[in-house]
Image 1 (cartoon, rainbow, N blue to C red):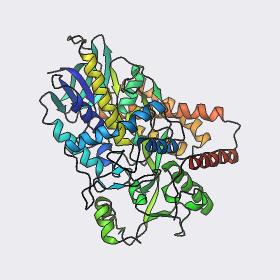
Image 2: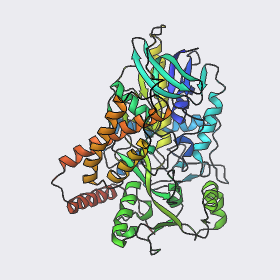
Image 3: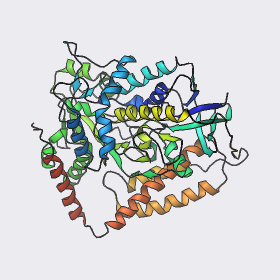
Image 4: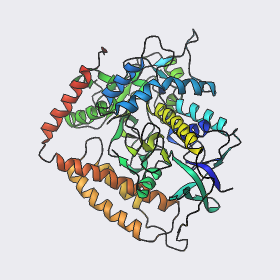
Length: 517
């Protein structure tokens, strides 16, 4: 079978939840780029934010915190949808078997994370994403109308007069599949950086493909660098020390083992992620050191082990006991706020093409995502996409048109080192505080690499697909960064820091929560 009503590229929370919410009489194909649970959704630790049966919380307070964290650049309509429909999807996944931690009285244990003014984070220990991903996957696998292709990479997608045609690289070679509707739920772009918390599949394939198809891409340069990635200094994929660790009282310390956040923000360790990451860079310049630590050792050891079993084990395997030791941390690429531009029903600017999850730009995150809003965004907007597809499918043609694809099977493999070069360029040019000179240099280099990949007639294999995607995403990011740098050419470093400090003061002014040591 190669003709479907809907093809979903991506097997994370957004892709699976789209399939769950589509009607049972629609034929659906879900593409999993690698093994079924290898995705950013499964790596999410902290939890899912939302107001659900919460007597002391309100969606408007959740929206206010989201605006503050996002620098007030959030789309108000989309954000309103996110916070007010959170309860619908939290309730649904609970009914699908997702097990959130509870207190002795039977109520859900809601934790606190940076930027939140209320305890509203539902979690399963410190592996919430894996709990949600595996429970959604288990349910999807029971649906008779859903087919899942594992180890199936989207090589190309073309618009046809009846919908879409996909060229898909599988272990058995290329397969073509056609659909009336397409959903890109391909995750983030973490592998465009030397160091990231993202999984190995996060190469921006959906974003790059949508860009080539002519879809609008927005704010791809809005990249979040998580302040507390485990600093092992020798692995590309950095283990994340969840926001929830700071939410439970962990201290940030500099190379002198001193707390320092009081120099930069009155919210201390509970400031939003971008504020903490910038503060670490500023403190690094002040001390002349890039050694930073997270310290929760003053808490009860049994509480730490029970609350953060996965983090505790992973750190212990790396030689650190978080009940006794300082944890080495440093900012690292983590999340993308921009992406394929969509409306509140996840519709892109291409008719019939939808985008959900991290690869999409809903506008809810502004210029910095509030902790634990990502899983919520994936669920809310994929459900809305499914409902929109259901309505449109009632009047859609039953025919399928198949496109032709060129794969250059006998062509040469791409030169080695292209992806490494892209990562090095991005790490130097656009990390936490962009280096304007490197932005312009990097842009010129990326343009040359992109031209070589597009015109080199190389063999289309997994290496080519990922290198092409990474290069396209880097090109879009640096194009945006170059434009911003040009517009602010007269701004001095001192003036830039003054503007940033004004933003911090404004964000704290709008937050009536008292943060104390």
